[in-house]
Length: 208
Image (cartoon, rainbow, N blue to C red):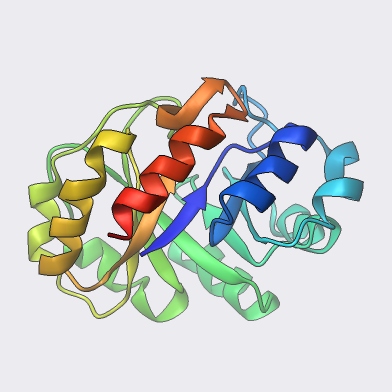
């Protein structure tokens, strides 16, 4: 199970994450309305961190997204803005970085809508629908994922906390396409400041 820790921003906290947690991915939020927004001037030290980095974007122009891949050394882009199929196709052809398509889950899932994106994304990420475009701290009904019809892997997000580790292991046992988890607000001391001890404990529990 891969672990992505999202909403990282504070330099000392990031270095602590690298040394003490060693997640598979570190997420950087480039949405200016988010309290975890990463500024361009932070790229000098962020780009040197020895972790794969995911840039979270919401309705950005392609040129800006490609610039951020280069400036911050991103390995993936996580599309949170309801980007169209055409936008995703063009972006996929313009970069070697992975493309993650976020699907916001309310009361149901539209598999037919998702099917068109399958050839053009590297993975899906399921998050709880909210006005804030993620980071709501709320969990959606995971039973909706039991009918997941694609071979394409996906990440699980939405209000995850340390207490969810056993249930996530059980879910992954039933749905092999579940590649990993996206952790954010449930492991924070403050927006952008992660509780490294809680992340360590979660990782140990998840990998039992």
